[in-house]
Length: 218
Image (cartoon, rainbow, N blue to C red; front, side, top):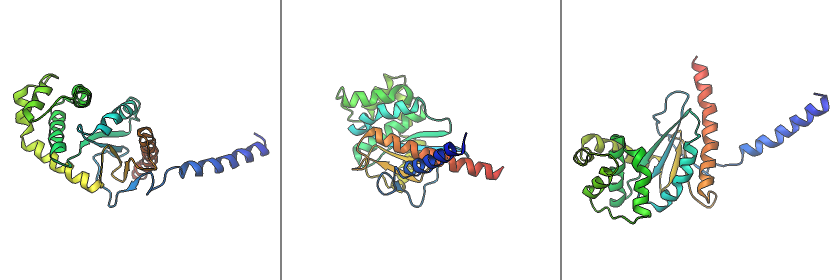
């Protein structure tokens, strides 16, 4: 490479990368969580939490976007879902999700629960109704109901309710990256696709930090 071409590439690198780095700004496209919330990620991993509710129509419309991302997410991403507990209705579906997750039913029942509520307009007026739904997707109804009332489910719900408050969640769907960054829809984040892009940007940024931390401990 001649001197002129090397200089040109250097100038282009300086011009392009600062713009990319400034594409998303704290206070506009995402919120800094202060203090940061402790994550469940292993060293070198980046945690991504989706805070959602089955009762939320926006969450239903967001699912195709997060599902598409999950098919190709980096191996270093530790993804999990937290069900919001804003009111009595949300709390019922939070208990439904936590129970299903602890019983290994989410993979087969997550999308169908959204569809049952928002496409089929199915009414779930009690945990008994919800247990009937999960029985259609492989659960033992009696075991589902007993698990829903268990100490383990109550403990996890309490922990996740606290995490949601600590994240500063005001609405769903929201994404939390590394316990440090909250991304929710606003005038600067007008689409679900943009929500995913900002999350990917922050994940990549945090992965670089995680890599450096692992390297420094070796």
